[in-house]
Length: 318
Image 1: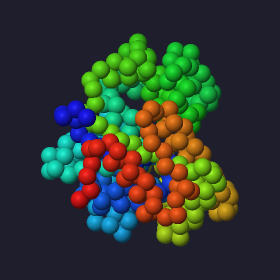
Image 2: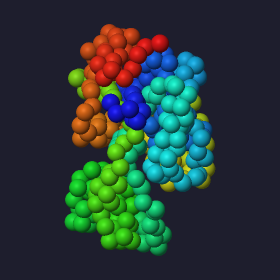
Image 3: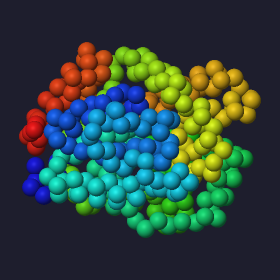
Image 4: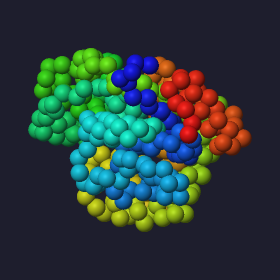
């Protein structure tokens, strides 16, 4: 490893795969601090729906970049990378190790690949025009237009990710360049991090789906309905509104569907989100996979993770 690079452990993977508990165990073994890589856990108050780790789950390990943004404030991946880099440099400067943990693939890739973001070119009038078109013509029309000018970017975007489809079209409209071309130019500076990444998965997909279903049930037991009711009646920002767990329950509050119907839809949408997360990480090279159904408990899983980490030679247990 180059002397100037900061060693970074990353624990990524789909929702409900056990990232937090594994990251905490690794932090305990290496005397590390955790830096969140989750685009929804950044928001204040959105605790249950985003599966924000509790004090008990953190087990005294410092967790950074959690619960610090008001839900009605705009927030971007560029801002995340700026804050995450500053936090990592600070932790490293205190001679502590860093464990990056979360399932937001865009945040992970942008940070570890050292994407340099250009000053944002914004055309609010054009952006609003695209939003109105999406309402009347459907998101697929916009995704097809993006595919015609930037097929690589379009292939990476889900039809439901309207915000990023619009942003990609807006960038091309305002700069004349595709977002793919801009991303390639932004990778010219090498990353300051030497990252060993572990992605959690399951060989039997039903194992993961069962964990997701149990997590949703637990969220409901611990107050998800009250949290969703509060946030759906507040002026959430556009990014915060994407949190799975609120919009799926809205038909229940409106009297349009039964609670059971909404819960089943919430579980289904969470399973679909997990599949999209795994799809993102599978496109990335040099990721080490650990399958949660291969291990009897969290200690065995952590042992396997540490074996991978220590093969890199950059980490020693305290």
